Length: 424
Image 1 (cartoon, one colour):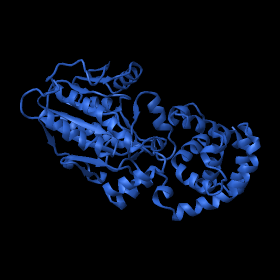
Image 2 (spheres, rainbow, N blue to C red):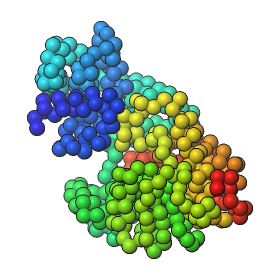
Image 3 (cartoon, one colour):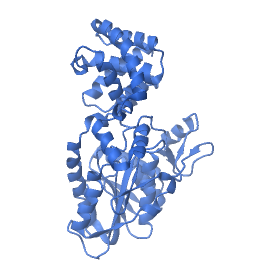
Image 4 (cartoon, rainbow, N blue to C red):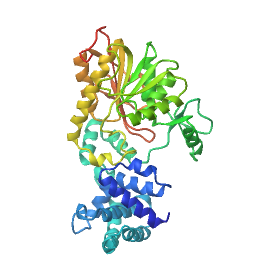
């Protein structure tokens, strides 16, 4: 595929993402990395690109045709972020806007990009953090208040880098792979990814972010002292269930997901994890087909806003607003009440999200703990020191996005009164 064709395809995909599609499934079907770099780069750096472009347009950027807007963003990205020589990036954008059927805008593209590139370079050095690091202003200010400027800016910077290919092997990783600094068993290619990708295709390895792997390891540690079946209430895509099943060798378990198609994927992952006697079941975690008070350990990795995964799914940041958080929290409370109702006396639920927002984490946990009579379990000492975890609420921990991990928040609650909860 030529450079012009790559740019044109990237522009068309960006128009689809702007219309509501998610980038990851669109890019799965695109060969090579050039289109992927442009699409994800524009989504990561959109605030910077738009600020630079907006200063040189006579009308608002959102009034332009979507294809023209996408080509302009690609041109600024290439020259100001990727390092393509500015004349090459401008010329490529002019050819691309013609290729997407908007040749009448080629003069505008040429004139605006020549000025916008210099502006973007200056903004990368001196712009405010929400422009320089290209996140919504409300989120930047919220994280600085919550985590302090240094930690918040570190997380924002991590979001601007592509997520690495991390995996774990069902029967031990071969030599020659890079080991994660604080998640046992997590490995990444040290150069050519062929060894890992071949093992993934053969079902011997599982691609999974290290922070997500850590959730499964903590779940296994919390469940290890008990007996009887364990349950994962929101299991898809199945990585945590498979690793948990591997760690709890021979222990029975059930992995639930609301959608039949996603449950099939969970079953395939469980099959690749070995001979663990786990079932993959399509069911609503709010109404699980399990007897109340019968499960000694429940993992609930709840659906959430995903603010810990913005490097992996950068379009989320532009779709999310603070007003969306209460809706996530309502569903999360329902799921956590359901998990609490399943707990046997002395049983534990590990509640996690890939969100960094307290509304979806400590606020949910504290409310359900009061309602259900559950006691928090301190997780500080269970998280590897190198993870740089920060306290979340009274006993939870929060992992901020880093160079080798997504962000996650984790809480554990235990039923200590010997009686079923209000959710049973």
